[in-house]
Length: 429
Length: 127
Image 1 (cartoon, rainbow over the protein chains, first blue to last red):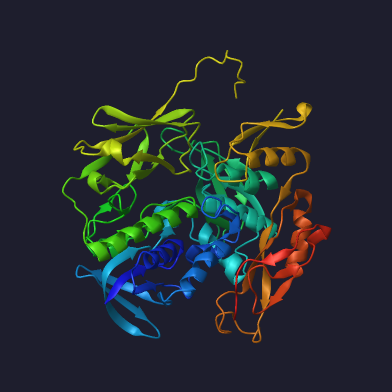
Image 2 (tube, each protein chain N blue to C red; image 1 turned 135 degrees about the vertical axis):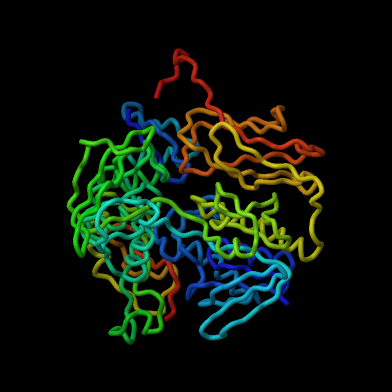
C-alpha cells in the first residue's frame, strides 16, 4: 500500500512527490508515461524558467533537473514508460509497462499531475486539403529539440501562444524562414516578452485579428491563405486574403488539460478550466485525490506549477497523516467582470491557515484596473493591477481572517479604473 | 525617448528609455528592468539556447535503438552575448557536438564568438 501515487513525472508531479516526502509520507510512487522524468520541460530548451521560484533564469531541462536530482536523493519510487489506465474509487491505480506488465497498486492518496496536450487541427475546422506539414507547435518542438529533425523550411504559425512564439525563434535560428505569426484575437495570447524576443528580434510579422482560412497542397502543404477577421464575430472578411507560399503550418492554438483518467474516475470537472473542481487545498471531489499543474488549469509559468504542486502535496500528506479535513461549511468562488474562472473553485474557510491564493484569468486586455474580492455584496479586499492581459494568469491572496466564519460566496471581480484626464504631469502612453 | 517591453521576466514591464538623459529608464518594476532598458538601447544582448549533436557509440542507429532517448543535447550561452552575434554563434553551434556522458554546465564551446561566454550543456545525458 502506497501513501501517495503521483500520476505524471513532469514539473507538477516531481515537485509534488518531493514535497510529500518532506511532509512525512513514506511510500511515494511517481508513474510517468514517457521514458524519462521532466515532462514537457525536456523539450523547452529556451531559458526564462525559475525566475520566481529559484530567483535565477534556467532552461527547461535545467529546471526539471533540479527536481529530478531531489527525487533521486530520496527513496521515492519512479516507474517510467508506465501508463496509468484507470483510477478506481477505492484508490487503486491500474497501470501497465513493458517491464512490469499490468499492475494494480493501492494507495492512500493520489495526486493527478498529467499535464495538458495541444489543440490540433481537428479542433479548428480550417477548410482546405489534408496534406503533410501541419503540426502542433509542441510536436514540432520535440522534433527539433529532442529528435533533431526540422519540420519544414518555410513556415506559417497560427496562434500566438507562447509555444508558437518560442518555435518562431527556434526555427529561425535553425535556418527556416518563418513568414508570419497569425492570431485570431486583437491581442496575443503569449507573454509580451516572447513577442519581443521571438518575433520582433527576427522581424517576423504578427498578424492580429487574422486567421488561416485555407490550407492548400497535395501531398505537402504548398500554400496557406490568411484572412482578417471581424473582431466581434471572428468571421473572415472577404477581400482581405493574404497568400503565403510555405511548406509548413504550425498550430499554437491552445492547450487542453488531459483529464481522461479524472473523468473516468468520476471526479467532477469544471467546463471552464477543463480540469477538476478543487478546494483550497487542491483536493478534487474525490476525497484523497488532488490535482495540480496543467492538468488542473493551463499555466504560463512553471514556477506557479511548482508552488501549486507543493500545496497539493502538503494537503495529501495531511490527508494521509491526519485524515480528511472538515467540509462542513463550503463557499463557492464566483467570477464577475471579465474573470473567466478561478482555482480553487470552492473554499472551506475554517481550513485556511494564513491565506487563500486564488488564481484566475481575464477575458480581454485590461488597462489600469482593480481586482475586487467580495463576500456577497460586501467588498473585503481590493487589489490594484497596472495592466492585465489574457495570456498571463493572475492571482490574489485573500487573508484567512477576512473569510473566517462566512457563509457567503466569494466573488472575484475585475474592473477597469477609468483614467483621469492626463493633466497631472504624467506622460500619456 | 524609446519605448520597450522588458524581457527579463514574464511580467513584461513597459519601459521608456530617455537617450537624451543618460538613458534614464522609467516604467520598470525592478532594478533589472533598468539594466535591461539601458543595455537594450545601447548594446542589446541575448542568451542563445539551442542544441548540439550527440556522439553515441552506435551512432548509425536511431537514438532510441542506441539506448538513448534524445538525438540532441540542449545547450545555452553561459551569459548573454551581443545580439548582433547571435546568428554567428548559431553557425558555431551547428558544427558542434558532444560525447556522452554529458552533464549540466559542461563546456561545449569555450568563448563562443570571441565573447566571454561559453556554450554549456543544459541537461545530464548519460547514455
